[in-house]
Length: 509
Figure 1 (cartoon, rainbow, N blue to C red):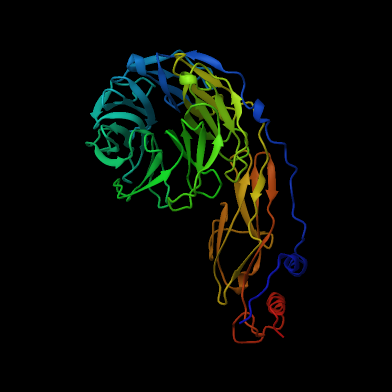
Figure 2: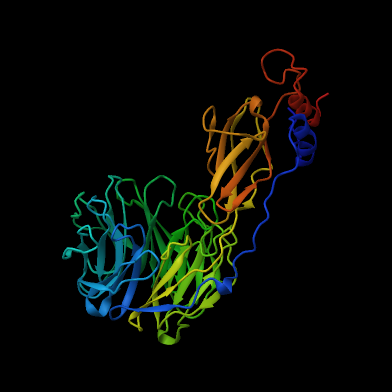
């Protein structure tokens, strides 16, 4: 059977008029991207405790804005700073933690709708759980033991039972482990179950890496120059692990969809190589080799977020001022496909150690909070970027050719612009809805269980508050044999223009 040759030129020139379609694709004028040197206003300093090593954001008082929590390592406590909704922060309120707290995480642990706190105590070999009283004050901490010294913690529903569990990177003598503590549903935790990783695990991140709906773990191992990926079996056991090579002395990891394909990629700060590694996910928790980007001396923290309002994840990297480090921040903007432009430097305080991104002043963009270890303070940098209308980064198509009898066709688009972005797919310029073999009609990925009757052009409109843009159109077509029965119903179909055109193009007489 001859193969149908569907070049996009004759499709646009011949099929569109036959279907009553215009070949002109509507567009929208695009604003220029934000100037990367002008993203953030100068930093404002806010006093906290001694040796602040971690800062996190969350809505602690239920008023809809982001508050801040800081781990003060030298004071054995944490600072809570409540936001008034405009980015102005109240004076810190201190709460006791354990011995030398190094990390904090925020989530609703007991299901009452309030956000609670978990603190990793570096020399206490434990974590402290502080429950929210409902008014952003916190009950005294309850401690849960770990095998050894925790360095980083994450919270998420690891066993799929609807409550929030805990995983900690633990620096155990001679090796490293991840300690998993499952929530009993009431903010009490079962004893630690440990999983081996590499030597000196410094940072842990959580997300669905293999697309199966449960949360997996990624841990950077400073001595081994690797990342351990722990794949969740769905029940908070991790039977499969993979080692990924990165740079020298990796000490921070973050997860996010860097290339717009719907899965979580990895970003790792390499302390002694003065760069970051970006490892793109193949969709199954395997990763392409890392691409390296220079960021300056001694990076210690990395955060991901849309800094320039174009809908993709950009990078912020903090570099310590100790040991001759750069003592500043680097911003790298994403091109929408997971590649990054050159770094742009911003100042913070003395020896920045941790980063948190979020909309602190309620204007719709990502601001930045930085914990400065040697300055005993926070730097807050407000984002002053202008929002952008949507644009298409990767077009669908140009065509999908299915075998005789049809099959499942997939079209996907990658778009950028200030979020949230709304998607609507069209068939022959008529809006589609899910059902009848169509799914994903309002998402970036359209799936069509197609027969010959579904041969048509497909496009997607992407919209945000500033406007809309329509993609190039793609063709889904079903291969037909050299017969006048183009629709396969047993009778001649002499009036079927699409079938005739396809067969003629394939060389049928």
